[in-house]
Length: 187
Image (cartoon, rainbow, N blue to C red; front, side):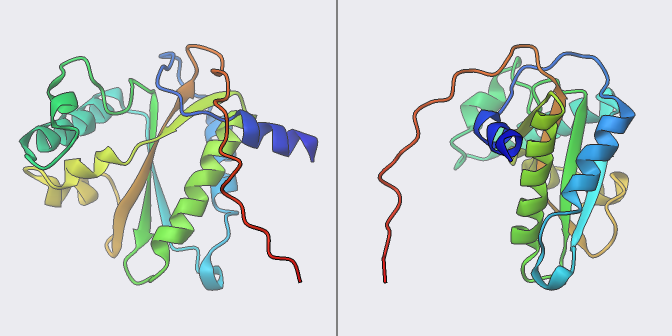
């Protein structure tokens, strides 16, 4: 139990990855534990797209950046214009978590699966970063064809993505946590 708590406390969003490919068995483990996430009515309304093709990862980053740069209401417009900004921080793996459109609670269920991926990655010595700006790639030019290109089944929509790989640096110190965010009501 102490190891589980240690992994939860230690996990940080990683934005610096080595170019080394992730071991297949580590990817399989991460995906297996994602499927053990709780889901409403045990519907398991998720689909996982694992991308290890660096050209495709770069294309997704470029598409999202173009849509972000064109969005005048986006607080990320300036960041998207930076030629050095890579949406997935040059991670060798991107996992897209899609949810069944027929499931009213797909967002919640897929978020639980995403969290399992993040925690499993840390337990395996991998770095991870939950990246939601990738959704802009689906809003830009040709975005409507992207789900089919990525093998996302009909009836599913992309919700979350995770950049995954080996960390360039060890974990950063844990910033202080807010303690005043809990209310106890005793009976």
